[in-house]
Image 1 (cartoon, helix red, strand yellow):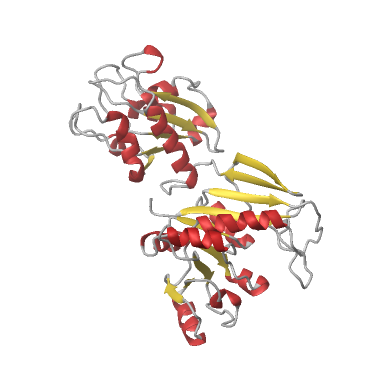
Image 2 (tube, helix red, strand yellow):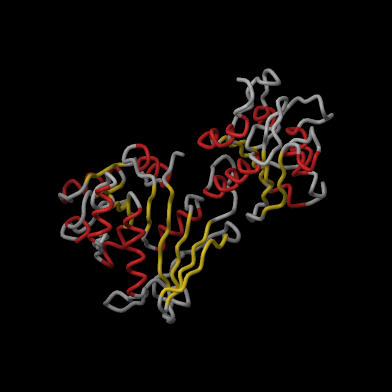
Length: 376
């Protein structure tokens, strides 16, 4: 996986504000919830805030519990997670507490911002990402260079909005506080444009003193060939479905899910489903939908194995079934090997017909596991 697991964390008022416009920071969380946040911080590899949060709140972003810090070190981790901030200009106060507390610090900025940060003498590693800031470049750097697998993002609202809009958030942990702000000039959790990815999936609700924690997972597929957090979720589900297939010595075990543009699951299927010894996963899933269903035009088919282009058991292979259904996007984990058919190229056929094909190879081992008994 090229990016870390991105966890967005925020507390808001009942009317969706992060703060008021007063000179002091509005405390929205309860003491018990602050301890929960400390626990989450201790579980991640890095914590990220925007430059605006540093200017407005002057945070330290520490793991406060000595026991949690000791547990991190016992597990071979640094005492504190890496602290990361993002600034296009590099114009930050060198005296801010962010730079002078905790462990390692990292500033991700532009080429010009790096020059400015260098002149200010900021107590941090400075990484220039190019002429402009790009979240995918930043997340790739954190994963591949810094070894960050879990990233906690604590603000502000602009950063939360951008990560959700670009399909880069894996989880939202939102605390709802029992008060109203009611000031249109106050900062809100999500900026203009909001999140257009459909309904999020509720994972958990928990009462913590007088606040409520809600954990959500984005569900809407990515756009075009750009994978989103939801793509990983649905492809993992397809791989789980593959494990339900009755084993066969003459066919692969495959799972498939059809998901609408709004993140709604439309249908699912797996190989040899319902006692049919030759049905394929994509075929089984698509058969559960009306061919005239208008949602298919915006849907994504997630298949643990590349859709087939040749088969002896049916007149139409799965790649052709997908094209005939009008689906324009396919996400798969594993290119079909030459075990049963030579020169298989379902992805190539689909792409030549104008379908966006995304191969998420980081899920390949999960997709192969139910097929470990096959030769090759």
